[in-house]
Length: 175
Ligand code: GDP
Ligand code: MG
Image (cartoon, rainbow, N blue to C red; front, side, top):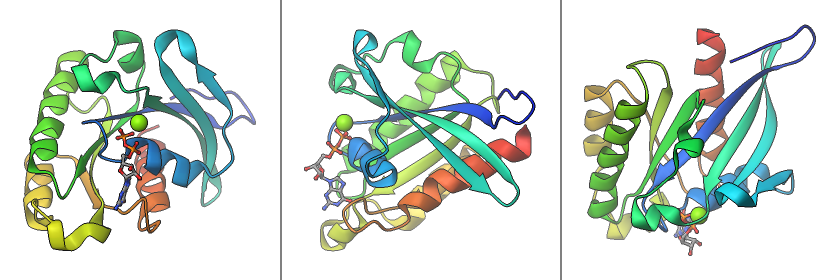
C-alpha cells in the first residue's frame, strides 16, 4: 500500500482458484465496463478501480488469470507485490474448495503470515440445489486460517461489490 499526497493508496489484489469457479465473472460483474488495461506478456488481465470508503479511497489493481490456473502454474509476477487475494471456489464443486486450500498454501510460501489480506469466496450460490460445500464448512475453514469469508453469485450480482469493498476496507485499516 503506497500513497502520495492527494492520490489514493494503491493495492494489488489477485484472484486465485480453480478454472471455471467464476473468477473472471466476479471481476467483470464488479468492473462493469471499466476495463482499463491488459498485460498480455504475463498472461493476466488487470483492471483498476477506485473504491471509496467513507472519506478514504483506495485504488485497487485487480489481477485476473488467463486460464493458467488449469495447470496450477501461476507465475511469480502474478503474486509479486500482492496486498490482497481472493481464493475463489464453486460451492457446487467440493474439489474446487480443496483446491482453494492448496492456493492458500502457495500464498503462504510467497508471503509472511498477515502480510496479505485474504478472503475465501464461495461463488455460485444461485445453484443452491447442487451445493456440495456448506456455508458452515467455508466459514469454519476461513476462521481456522484467519481469512475473511463471503459467499457470492456473480450471476445474480449477489454480494459481489461487498467482497471488494470489504477487502478494501481491511486494506485501508492496515495502511
Ligand atoms: P474462471 O475460470 O474462474 O474465470 O470462471 P469464469 O468466470 O470464466 O466462469 C466459468 C463459468 O461459470 C461460466 O460459464 C460462467 O458463466 C459461470 N459462472 C460464473 N459465476 C457464476 C455464478 O455465480 N453462478 C452461475 N450459475 N454460474 C456462474
Ligand atoms: Mg477466468
